[in-house]
Length: 177
Image (spheres, rainbow, N blue to C red):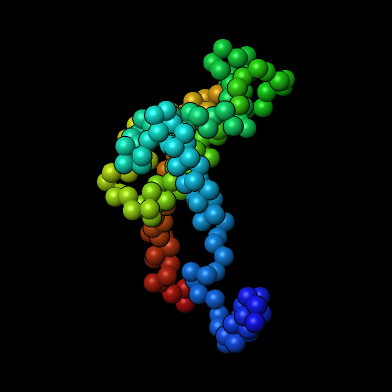
């Protein structure tokens, strides 16, 4: 019997069981996280000198984020640009394309999770370093100013309590008859 027929026979002899969660196809998020992790590890391998994950610091993560800017698709106006602060500029300008803040923020979130899944301790995660958080905040604020859009968090106001008026309370207790 050849290998193909042995494999067919083995597959056909197994009872139909539902696929386990490990055998199920990974979600879009899991696929993206795996691709992002592979890209980050490749960046570390190609770094001069090559870096191991244990030698990686927040500064290396910042280098990686700046490296990714060259592949960005978001126009970010320079302060000297006449369209700086204008949400919908009326004409093209030579300002650079960069990674959008939301994309970088999501990327760091996926990489932080992948780091811990690959055995890294949460307290030594270079992707969660203070410098990385500050950089993301600066990118967010600068891009918001460049577009003229505010990223201020909206605070929820407590709903005012509606107390029954004294006239309304008296009307309920007294009878019109």
